[in-house]
Length: 288
Image 1 (cartoon, rainbow, N blue to C red):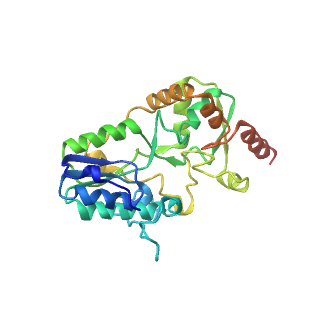
Image 2: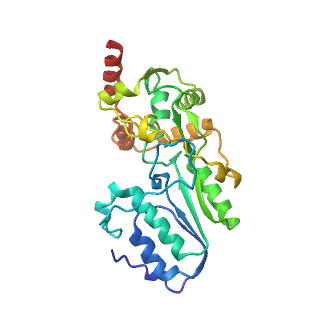
């Protein structure tokens, strides 16, 4: 695509932070003006670049996702979502080829206030409602989350230190049960949790990550997705605020959103499930 980046002509920057893109045409079109004019180019990528998510504890040396044969990396955005990991990998490679001084940041699940995806927000809101809450899998299933503010603050510190290389900027491993009970304690909810096995959820068409946010079925090919090593980032000063702080701030933001957004969250339109669907699954599980 030919997106006009000519406003960058003749500009020089100490640091550029490229936050949202998954589209190689963006990196290419920016580079025609910024190559040789940037002190440090920071590309915010994703853990989805990794080709194999079955190995718990894998670090930044793990293999990345190549472009499928015959795929044009400069395709239009409407046809690229299915190749998200491959295109992010290609973007990383463009950045590394173009800017001798580069920093590649690979976050996992980013959470906190102002996150419109509802992937974490679902849980503080649902648990605040109280009553019986359906919990997926087992209490020991691993999850990884990072507050967007922790990610942002660490990124700025990395820029100030002119750090380079690739880093998994993900939260430390946390048990799903600890996350849910931590949320409950933070907001002083009366909620109770009923754990429903992954196999039963699959049979009912309930998927991890989308219908049961944050959580992924830890079996098979996704066993390592929520167990990526963040040791390299920790050595460079990555820190995390308490879960209770993230929980309370996220809930306060969610409760201040426009009613139409709150209604969409209650119906699970982006992530999670509706209270009606939750009750149906719980009733079916108890009957079994």
